[in-house]
Length: 512
Length: 83
Image (cartoon, rainbow over all chains, first blue to last red; front, side, top):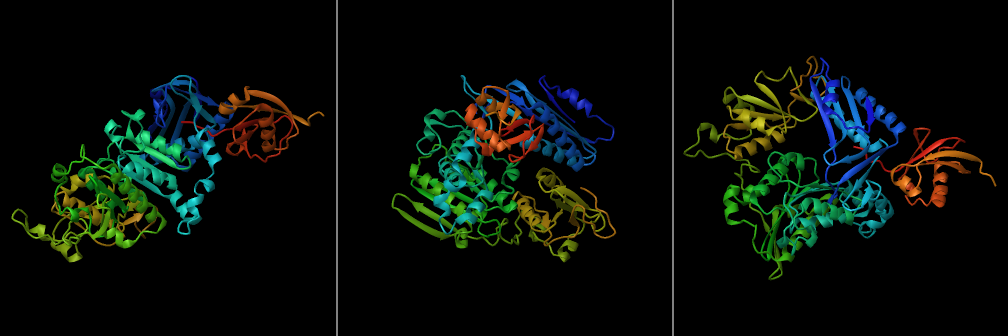
């Protein structure tokens, strides 16, 4: 059911209207009026609707969603009129017997509303400035025309129309919008990378301006990611630029890197560097990393399945220890050094997307010295006993028990020899644990729920499995690095985990 | 020469501001919304690019090439921004 109103939305009353005995979940989305957009302050929003059609379309959206997600009851209310900061612009509630469908349905309703509900909003800025959202940048994009914008690039035989399409389809995350991230992101945006996300929790400082070229003196004090995103949207309105003006943390890193074509490490600290490196490896995403010291810089490309990873380079030293000797905050830096390295990151990223990357480069550290003008490539150390990228047979140490010497990836015989163990089946969305073939000691956990996996794994010897047998090994390695000595993985794919809806014969699947 | 038919046109958001009115009885020879918009651009000073518009005829989404009938209620829809 869909309603338009020019009155305040009462979410509690709407929630009550969805109460029903068969519902086991309620997913609510609230769209609020925020005080900024595209890097500019917003004082209020004015919503205007084509009433008759909006009601028809709104009803169509909610009933289509209910048909696609049987069991879901959808209620959606959209405001019109003048709304202040913090006011509720849209409320969507989906009640359902199960949470999974409710989340999907709720998401579908808001995306459809944004696509087709004939509602417009005018954004009021300070003074008398105001503009209709989507009507100015869209118009600009139309005027520019992608063909003209990229003409001098698509005429390169190595790029061409196909290459430009690949760039438009790419999704790139840039972590750290500083000396490296600014030039890297600028060139990725102008080259037409279709979706670019800029992550940085920092604010612009005066001492940033000599090298962080997306910022001007007027930006001091503003959030770096937000300012940079606005600047890049102006530079190329044809691509989608998103700002993540917050830290990259163990809690959000997986969501940020998963599904990316390439991730750029433009950070200045080892904690984030290791976090990104491990998350990219786990998600199967190439990482293009750079670091600068005074007049010199180093570029590394970490492919997810290659040996010679960041842990090999630093041979297992904890991030905190490295931080103490290499803290970049306040360190002297020659501005062109971060510029050159940032642009090299952009170049390597574009080459990966375009299929022009040299595989050998992914095993090397490229060292650049702007003082003597030299550049050299050095083969990275690949430690065969590296717990992350090697195939370690850990040597028993004074502290470790007998299990410590056992390999990470178990053969069937080794699994039996281990005695009673719990098995954690890592499920991606849309996968199901087969009730027939799964053993009684198998616990199904969503792949992304690292907190729960760590908890369970801490209770005793644990074997990880997943549908294809790749991510379970990667995750087991990470847990070993974290210090869990009784974590193992089974190699290869398993028929115990199946895509939902595919029957294994007599057995019926059950959800985890 | 008299125009062949009259249409009822409503404007919203950016188009309403550019047209200076929210509705209009508009005598026209235009056969399609596309032709109609070209006439409106010339007559009412609309600058919004036609390529970005959708159109609704009698409260239903239609195409810019749908034939127009006398008395149709026509709304040009600029890029929406609900939510």
